[in-house]
Amino acid sequence: MMIRTTEMTYRFLLVASLIFAPFVCATPTETIKQNGLELNLFYGKRSTVNAYLFSDGKELILLDALDSVDDARQLKILIDQQQLPLKQIFISHGHPDHFIGLAVLNRAFPNAEIVVASEGIKQELIGWANWMTERGWMHISMIPKSEKAPRGFDYERLIKVTSESQLAFDSGKTLRIDRGNLPTETVHYAMLYSEDLHGLFMGDLASNKVHLWLGEGVDTQSLENWQTLLAVITKRYQSTGVTIYPGHGKPAPLSLLREVSQYIDVFKFAIRTGGNQDAVQTKMMALFPDYSESGYLPFGIEQHLVVQTAKADGH
Ligand SMILES: [Zn+2]
Image 1 (tube, rainbow, N blue to C red):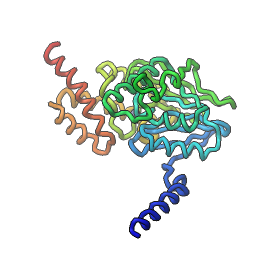
Image 2: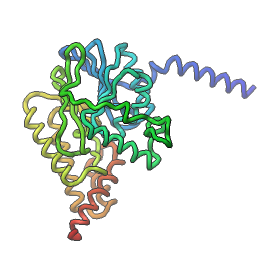
Image 3: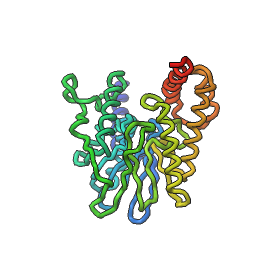
Image 4: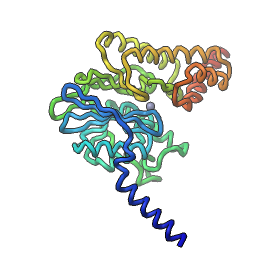
């Protein structure tokens, strides 16, 4: 009897979850509509990473694919709700938190072209996929296809490189691609600019109240390049009322870029003066108490303390 009750309860829950899942579970999003272009902002649940869904009323273009299978499934629901074809999935840069959802989305929307803005981004992305896989951290659906993993995700075949200067809807609406800047948070990356929304989609060049990734791939020169580029962008868009759409955290006015640059200054100072790994970590957390993703800190601190120590030793 006990077993039957449990089984019935289980069945009821299963059926209920199937019926109500699309309504109950869809992650809250925000929608912005301007000049005939609609933007749905999708905030990942597992981490602070964002995905952005653009619609011209006839087709959809997605920017970034989130960092978990669960979040990607929620994103799929949001896309389904639009009842429009997904034309492209554009990945801003090669960090795993922006592409782990690709297998789920590719299965759900096989006609959507997966696009990056340069061969460098594609190869960096594949490099990170291998890095994650070697450490046993990669979700099984995104393990790169190989002789050892014949059913793995076929990055080489599925990811297309575009050399166009923009992503274009058939209606003529466009998202301008900004690529080819010096290494910053990654070596290769792209930003999008929407004239209709007057919005700059900066990937991980900007985060809002989220610790920056300053680990693997980010050297001292990258930090300099990053701050220079933030200053250049600030100058370019000054007094235009542009909205910054960051890779992590909420959208913000242009002044966000000053905050990001100040964060880098503080990080550099903490590395120079903070002492050992733990002390620097404690200092950064005390200075940015309301920032998420403190899990990024040890990677960045380790990376930059080593450089600092090497310098001090005269190497
Ligand atoms: Zn990221």
